[in-house]
Amino acid sequence: MLASSFPEVCEPRYVSLQVTVNPSLLVPLDLKLDPAVQQQKNQEKEEMKALNDKFASLIGKVQALEQRNQLLETRWSFLQGQDSAIFDLGHLYEEYQGRLQEELRKVSQERGQLEANLLQVLEKVEEFRIRYEDEISKRTDMEFTFVQLKKDLDAECLRRTELETKLKSLQSFVELMKTIYEQELKDLAAQVKDVSVTVGMDSRCHIDLSGIVEEVKAQYDAVAARSLEEAEAYSRSQLEEQVARSAEYGSSLQSSRSEIADLNVRIQKLRSQILSVKSHCLKLEENIKAAEEQGELAFQDAKTKLAQLEAALQQAKQDMARQLRKYQELMNVKLALDIEIATYRKLVEGEEGRMDLPSATVVSAVQSRCKTAASRSGLSKAPSRKKKGSKGPVIQITEMSEKYFSQESEVSE
Image (cartoon, rainbow, N blue to C red; front, side, top):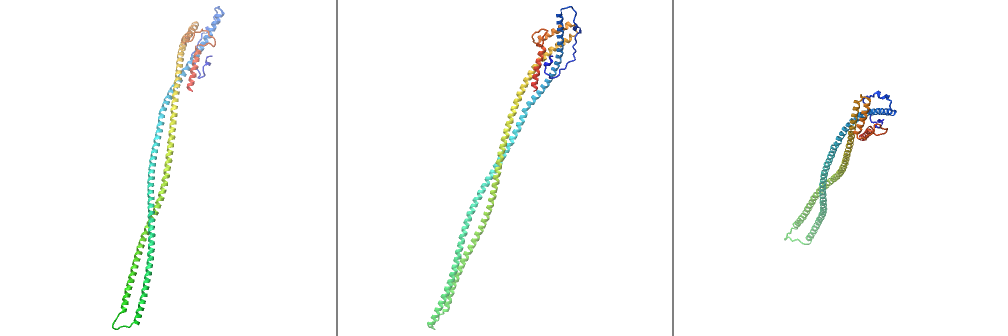
């Protein structure tokens, strides 16, 4: 009847304790007494039987509570293991934080290395820029020198043309002088011939005109030849000088052209190198930016995980405190149940010791034990005859057991 009020957690196992009832107690005594007294005695007998059954069920429930106690001890040891596991979260958190710090240190080292590489590349770019500017200035100087040499070459060509013109004019002048000389010789010869014809020759005065003519002719020829030789020598020397200077200017021009070609090739190479260095710098800047973004994301992720771990640790501490409070409440309930179980165990042992006494003694002892247990439990005194639905020690144990099992189910959840 009272077993239905307990939650169906486990099947109570009853001990092999036989409750013996004296058959003589069941036989009504023919004492010629009042039927009301006989009816009261029969009712007391029925109540005694019900109490014996309740004591038997209480013994089984005590054993079930002992099993529950062992289960609670097992769970308590498990909760202590979970407590150590929860406290191990700090170690795991420190390891994870150490790994994140190691990754952050590696990212910082990579960033420093990339910055050093970027500085080296920038220094190389600056060096190439300076060399490029030097080459540009050299090219400008060479172009200016080339223009000057070209001007000098043009001037020398003009001078050569002028000298050739002068040479031609001198040659024409020499030809003219030859022609004039020949014409004068002819005129002189004609005059001499006329004089020899018209003038008579004095035999006493001998003049050798032919010698004079030959001498004058020789002198004239010598002067003309000398002038021609001087003009030819001067023209030849000027021509050779101009040719030498032209050859020199030509070699200088050729060397300048070769240098300009080399400079153009070097400029193209430098431009290609500058483009490659610029592309490399852009790649390095992109890599640095990506590394910074990745490091920032890793740092944010680490901060987020750190906050999550701290929140989980705080939640675990709160759960642990709540579990400890529930465990303390369960221990308080268990202590109260142990006290009541010990009280009723003493009652049961006393009843077992008095089972062999006469029936009147058993009834009086049971009634006195019930009253004593009720007074020890702190319950209000009640008459031995209780109606159905009245609250007694067994019903109080049932309510405390229900409270104990409900709290235990909350802890398991």
